[in-house]
Image (cartoon, rainbow, N blue to C red; front, side, top):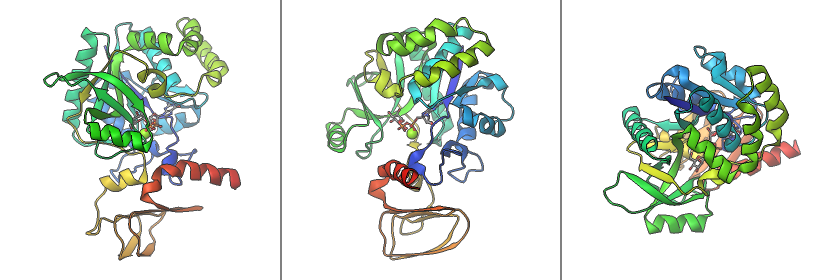
Length: 351
Ligand code: GDD
Ligand code: MG
């Protein structure tokens, strides 16, 4: 009765210019692992649920890319979204499809862009979460011990019941500003939201009815009754009108029955160049060079990536991101990595 949903429709804009709208980061082998992030995610989840019960949700534009990268899956495991509307509509759509197939089903929802090394520990934690949400109506999250005031994550404040393995969540705060994130870290009872969710499909559908009723009503009226063809034209007609909102803002910040298991695996959201820098092998001054033959002089904590192998000489930088990709070059202090999104939009507008 367990299904998995991989969300693979983001554009990975903080990895611009390598991650592009035409070829987002989940389809790249960001870690040099010989597999794309999507392929790695699929393999990881196929150890937890039958691989025929893994759905991949993505923008219509990327359906061919998904099929190319996962050639063994059935065509109907890939669900196309006609517009980019963030994760809330995409999760409701997948929950309805799963519910239609099996009203008792539980599902794990996972991003397609994470680094998780210890797959055994991951499997164990996820199975515990599956267990927790089958006996009770719970929205299960996985939490990661925060190490710095990252403003790109959700923060989970849990109730401090020392022995309980599944902790109840008091508040969920998506992407707090820096001072707030700092105060969360100081106070202690917080975990980062790993962005991986486990729940019954029926229960998450109820939550949409409660917290995103408009979205719920539009979907609910139709999807249960439609055949595949009608479903596609329904989505084409209505999907663009859905509110553009993430599950974190739309449901998790508001829901009252949220539980968290502290992850026993190392985790990283490969969301930014800085997070990639953390995962890759470094020289003695903590520099990372991807593709290029580089000479770093009086330089430290810097990540350099070029499109082809070239020789790069970098002098006198600390904590920088340098990324070159065919037609674009970005040089940015690492502390400003969240701004790449804005910079990318600026460039798109201007050129
Ligand atoms: N199918 C589909 N459609 N997938 C999408 C869409 C969409 O419209 N938008 C985003 N995604 C996918 C992304 O590709 C990614 O795999 C996942 O959904 C999460 O989206 P992100 O845009 O990467 O979210 P985030 O990193 O800002 O925040 C989320 O993840 C953090 C941890 O990585 C939140 O859940 C945070 O609370 C969390 O801490
Ligand atoms: Mg992310």
